[in-house]
Image 1 (cartoon, rainbow, N blue to C red):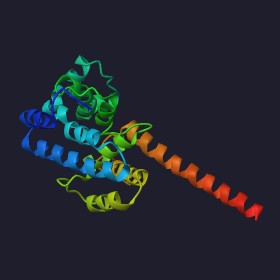
Image 2 (cartoon, rainbow, N blue to C red):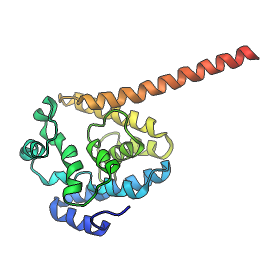
Image 3 (cartoon, rainbow, N blue to C red):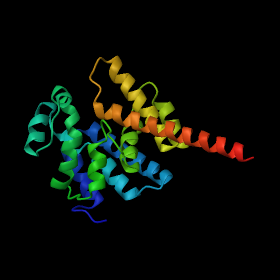
Image 4 (tube, rainbow, N blue to C red):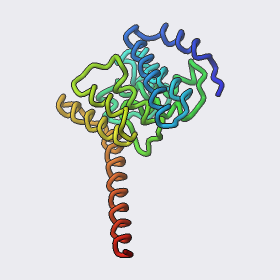
Length: 210
């Protein structure tokens, strides 16, 4: 797929707009996303671009996020008004078109969901979310366990662990938990429960037939 810039041009533009530490983080997410996409059979180019640009709106100050979102017609809920930094994900989903010439809706959606998640997340959405959590520059209690999961667990098992860790962390800090994060976790957990029930029912039928 072609974009308005080459990958090298995107990197140069992003580096000029972000703090060095944020740019290093973005490179880390991009490379981690490529590895995960290779493991799970997801488009590696889309993962590389989405990972690189996921934090592109962090060029704006926290105090400016609400105004920048309003300029772009982005819906702002009570949680976002209380925690404006969350808006960088939705702003970034638009910013990739404005600055970097990325028109791919799958990439925009993955960027929009990389912070709080959401309903019916695609494999690309999940990969960018998880890569943001475990990229090499991240350092927090439990990150090594999450990195190990990325080598062996299914994508949904990884997400369930990551979302649970994120929710517990936010609750311990006394902060608001975004409804989209709870929704994403519940959806994955319910899916697992339904699959287990279906497998148990199938096993029961097979036993009766014997």
